[in-house]
Image (tube, rainbow, N blue to C red; front, side, top):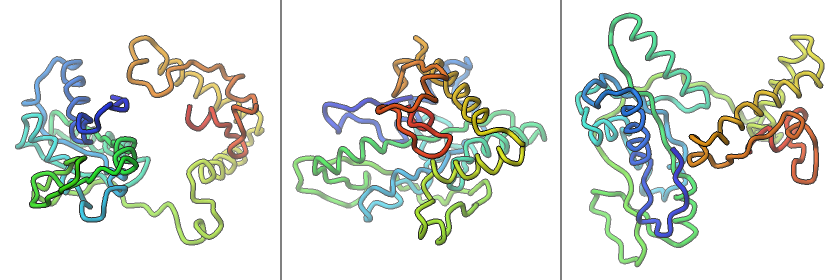
Amino acid sequence: LTQRPQSRLENALDPIGLAQAATAKALADAGVGPEVIQAVMFVEMLGEFRLPRKMIPAYDNPALSLARRIGCPEAACYLSNVGGNQPQTCINIASERIARGEIDTCLVTGAEAIDTIARALKQKYDIVLDGSAQTSDADKVLRWGDTTGVKPELIGLATVVVNLHDLLHDVHEMPVAYSFLEQAVRRGDGVPIEDRTIGNARLFSGLSSVAAASENAAESWFPTARSADEITQITKDNRLVTNAYSKLNCAV
């Protein structure tokens, strides 16, 4: 689910609202109601760290906040650790628990509204914690957050992926870090860099075709299908970000 820039930020959905809208679509697609959800796993939100310090954490238990909004407050609620691998980790954990007969259904979700937060801060909105005693005399106020008072159960391993050495040498950004991993895997597999590059481009070409499909274009930030050749061709508009990754192989 993609939230486009709103003419009035007060109309924008907060992360839980986005997850709620996405969940409604998923339930409709599955042909079931929220009452069947026995567990909710919410992927940790990094975007809220852009909020004013007085609001962090804005959502102390996002899985429970969502469960209450969609109508399954008795579901077991979990919060993942931080990491790009956590969505798949949640899927794995949910699948294992279903296979063991511990649960029959699980909602795995997550949401962020970083663009909305950035726009609000740039436009001098005062962002205050909804439902709190915080007040504001500002003309433009964004009320986000939810304090449940219930500590979530963490799932997934907390893996340190960036250390001080990485920071000192400016190799902590994901395109660079993944490029290092890519080269190590490629060399271990005995694959020439040209083959690895075109292989990645073919993968991203397929992803871009899905994003550009008529049924998905409205929810895609970049609904343009790209060929593998277009992705690998280095041009003024498609610069080389790191060895083996062009701009089109990273973001769009």
